[in-house]
Length: 415
Image (cartoon, one colour):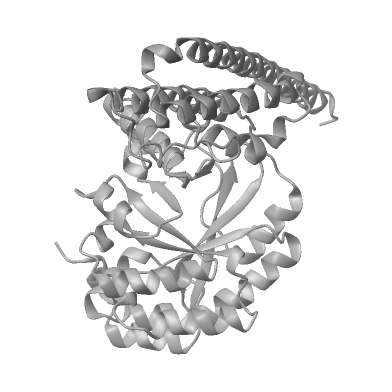
């Protein structure tokens, strides 16, 4: 069977000419915040728009560009257009983050990193507004040069996304070595999660893994509202896929931004994450105490070094001071701070006593206090859950009412 490039009669010289003539352009696929229900970003995808207006599909030239090594020339050659397009988008929404794809080959030499650094340092490319996506399979064999060059970008505030997470065989090892800030769950797994319990578990576990590592999580390949809502309930923060929007020209994305379009918003998944975060924090404290018991000797000074003892440093605390502020108008949210601070104060006393050599069985009273604060926190988080569910129900009723009114207006309109 002939390759897509052969069917389109694409040669490397054709591709070089397309780049030189400015026929390679960016199309943008929207990314939607599942918490706020608004556009929060877009992925810049290269398209070949010929002089006659026809579009050459990516499958007809991207594999050729990668196999020939010309992909790096394309990446470098498109940077000026990325800068220009991002300036237009940021004139409409300064908070929009645009990601673009790079291959491991692009980082085998310094030209891409050096070019990005010049644009960043010159103020032409805002660090907080751009993200580099690398496929998981492309970085599995990453060596020190790639790690070093990615570190250069991270130190300047550029986000790094592992694309197609879940398709490689050593994802966890890759995550431990490279400074990624975002995981993008592979669209194939996302697309199968409604039919496959195993795929659904993989997706939900990936979301939890990203959360525990402090990484942003993006699910790609969302083609139905049902999948969007399921991912939202699982705690996914950003979605991308045909249901929200197909890749579109720059002007269409600008129009979409200006339209103020909204999608279903909901923080229920993040509330559930907060519950798990708290329970895991308490378990980590108990585990640390039990591990210090053998022999009856005081634990070493670093026994609790991985334990987040400050209320602003644990995952629940970071969520409360950050993303959860969207829930600030709910009474249970305001009440969370007092028992959470008290929990950590109690935890500090327990850790201090353990480091002085106090045995676990002599800390029962303090542990009961810890449990009392913990129970209060879980209760408030459940109240928060109920309030969020009520908001979702109110929103659904409002949308249903608007749809009924729209249908009634359409039926009453003169024909």
